[in-house]
Image 1: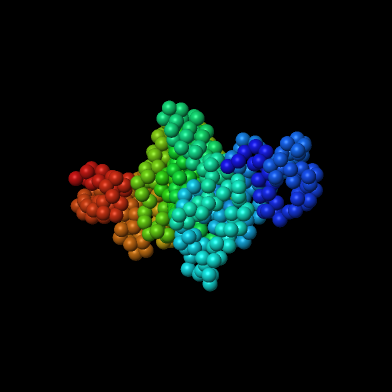
Image 2: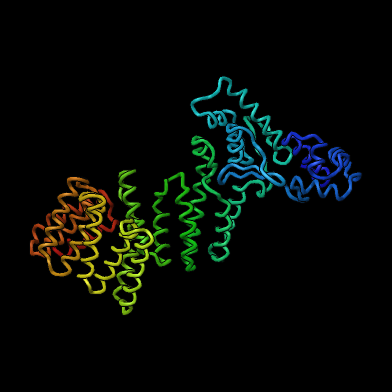
Length: 487
């Protein structure tokens, strides 16, 4: 590829071809003489004045020493920029073709792959001829800065500088971050932040779905997810929880692979929220993700999510039982009040905040207050969602815990048994919330001197937990621990 004055001449010709300008029109727009353009395009730069060359270089965005003035963006809506502004790439299918080539820079993309990605199951009458037309237009628009070369088996978009393609810059920064993460976590965090900031949304966000779902686009999304998880781990280890929250939320909202249901991402987001002083929001997120997993995929939350949930609850319970309990309760009550004022009392985050305050009150030796709060949440869920919604059923279990804590064991057991019955009817025997209700009932049997019933139900529930949830799931471990005490 040429450089210096000859390079500027090539770029002037390419710019005129893209914009459909005559030398006279370009001269008028750039404020130079037509003769200066002629000299530069013919490679006779010495005859053009330095000022004219400077103005033309600025006009097309040329900086001597850079590998290219055209810049392609695929980490969001497809963009092509040159000089002072965007370049019109043409109709949607032609834009999609550029996006496809840019997803695989410096790699061969076969004609068959292009036709399959562009037209899916509805190709035009002459797909190969149409494809050649689009390729010819793109080659004229990009050459010489970013040439599309005809190679054996297909075509290749050749890019030497990652400044010309945002995905290459992202990969370079993420690779550098990974290389120094062990020795210099602060520098790695900054590099990951720069890499993630290359993204403006889902890759090729304005393209048809069959282009957005191309394996190369999904591979990019996977690399973004990996970078975000690494960034979050570093940010939390350095105590900057708010930074982790911002990046994780961005990726969760723009995740084409998992639709925001990636377990590791949401587990880290919960921990980051809790670390940033928003434990109620973190617990509310757990409830939202759990419901979506059940509704959309028919599966329970996995180990990472449950462990994050348990860490948050255990940490808050320990802190609530410490000497700073009274100011902590006052602080949490303020959070509940603020969330209610901002979002309304029926918002899921508001109800999650009230449930969290109940945990704090119960751990602090105030089960009566906890009962009032959990009963408030249960009443709201019954009104909003009905008696048999999973959130209502879990809220019933929380009230039963409070009833047992104030010594009303018979009432607690009656509520647990009713909840278990309804969960079996509505959710099925093996639903995680049904299994949790069974664990509560078995514990209630043990507390009311019904050891045989507690053992029978406990063994059956443990077998189901191991089969459905796995040995390491918190519910499985809780069931096993309860059985060990009973037996």
